[in-house]
Image 1 (tube, helix red, strand yellow):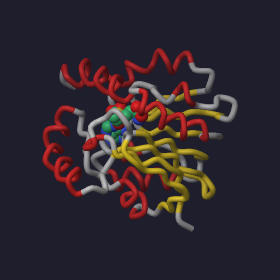
Image 2: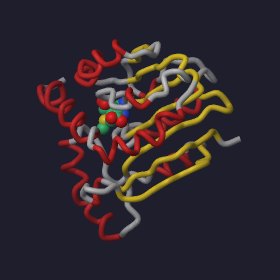
Image 3: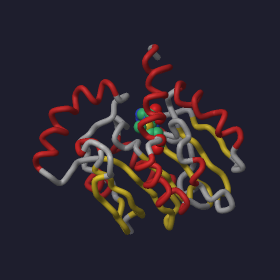
Image 4: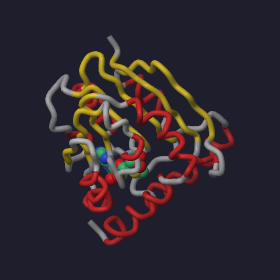
Length: 207
Ligand SMILES: C[S@@+](CC[C@H](N)C(=O)[O-])C[C@H]1O[C@@H](n2cnc3c(N)ncnc32)[C@H](O)[C@@H]1O
């Protein structure tokens, strides 16, 4: 891991993903997590204050980046929840089939290189009635904004640790065998439009 990934990127992600407009989205979705919870791309632990700790039996914090784990481990250690690190990528979740009640996926599907495999893993570990709680930025509905998303994506990808501006989040979920039960979408305030079209909702495995 280079200097940028180890020291700069965790600070940059912590700052940008901790902006009030993003925390407002977290507050709408993370408190719904219950039971055995798997958070994909735990990052700097920005979701921790939003969990309803009484409803969470155990939190599996999956995060492949050592820099991000270093940033969030003091918070995780202080948590009232029983927590366990999974220091692997989402493409290879080391948990049993049908063993998780809630998968939490916030601002991470934009980054995962093998998103198809990762979503397959999430489906595999979810119990049949388990839920995937998501809040992700992605492809905007407006043509003019999409053009900018496509233009800026290559540079953004380098600066933002592999993040894509133009992923079609609902399509990715549906193509991977999820039924979207509830979705709320729109531009977040006080942010550039190319990076702020947000998809927040609840998905379940297709029957
Ligand atoms: C923009 S950050 C978001 C962090 C956190 N989910 C949040 O809501 O603040 C994206 C995270 O995805 C992680 N990530 C990158 N590739 C991944 C992969 N293949 N599997 C799981 N997480 C990954 C990064 O290390 C980073 O912590």
